[in-house]
Length: 366
Image 1 (tube, helix red, strand yellow):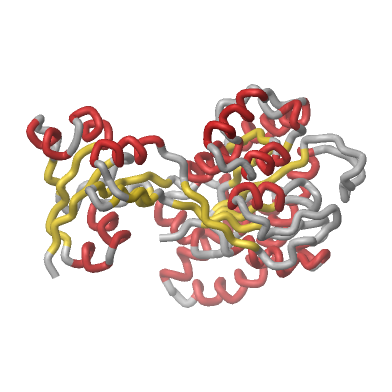
Image 2 (spheres, one colour):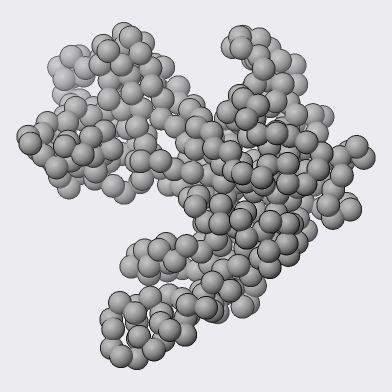
């Protein structure tokens, strides 16, 4: 079960620098000119989770396998992308394939790095990208709605349901509002999710500041914070330059010392990854044993058989029940045996809704 976050923004805002740091590679070229990234680069990064290290230590696991997120570095969008400007059609198609948008905004002054709009204004930049995505969605829906109206008039129930969602989306877009702001019920939300709309995707604003503002932000990031609050969106402040330097340090203690000297307790990338994880409404469950401590990703609200299916389809198909211990109880008890003796193990059935931090041993029969 893969989850992708697309890194988007105007050219020269630090997208590729951020991607390189995220993946600790030089796979994406960072250069001071637009469209230096022509094809989307994809990198998989581990989701930081202290519980996994603690669980592995308690269980004396020989191997640790963290859960992961995928980040896609998408080339810079420009004004007019929805009309094909600046290779816009290709880039918009790449955004359509991701689950969430990580919108990098330039929040630093640097005369040596060209800004395609001529000045630093992250709120304006955010609105440019949002407008292009809304225009692309508007064009997509307007082309599809007429034939769907004809089908709905014939009495097709599915067409009627889909049309109702599309018409609500069109009203919002024509008013200059993204689709993600519409309060759909569960059924309508599922329909909307199948329409491939760019502005239906959740957004995380990443404010790329200079090194001096990495710990406290600046006036630019403060303006983005106000924008994010108004949209009920998430926001993270980082310095992509610092993250790139930290990524080159292999020693954990050396990294910690470098960050501490800058007044930072953790990397900005850690916050980006965690925020992306929350943005997608994901949770982590574990399988723990002497061979390996393994973290797995699941969408919130899913049930035990679906969690089993993440590991192997046979586990879901033949699911009987799940022996379950919370990570907190496993660590506090000192392992599985003691947790059982303390009455902390539960037997959960097919209707059990998985909770973040559950440790499972699945019983199945195929």
